Amino acid sequence: MKSVDSRAEVDGAAHAVSLLGGRLLPAVDYIIPGTDVTHRLVRVEKVRPTPGQYPRRFAKIKKTPL
Image 1 (cartoon, one colour):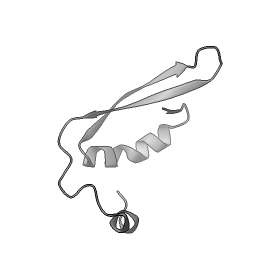
Image 2 (cartoon, rainbow, N blue to C red):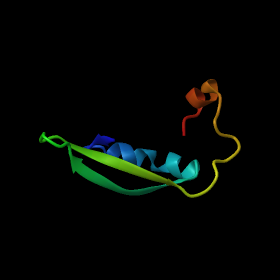
Image 3 (cartoon, helix red, strand yellow):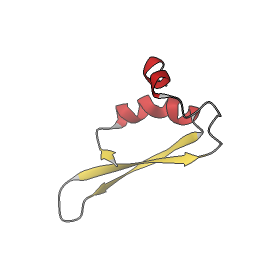
C-alpha cells in the first residue's frame, strides 16, 4: 500500500523487482471507506525463482544496492 504519489518510487524499484524474479502488475487506486483518503495498491507477481545470490548480507546490501 502506497500513496497515490508513489509512481517515482515504484519506477525506481522496477529493476530490483525484475532482478529478484518479480513483475510489476498494474497498480490499483482505492478510497479508504468513510474518508477522502486515496491509497495505491502496488502489485508484484512472482514469475521466476529468485537467483541464488539473494538474499545478501547487510554489508553487501549497503555497499552495492540493487
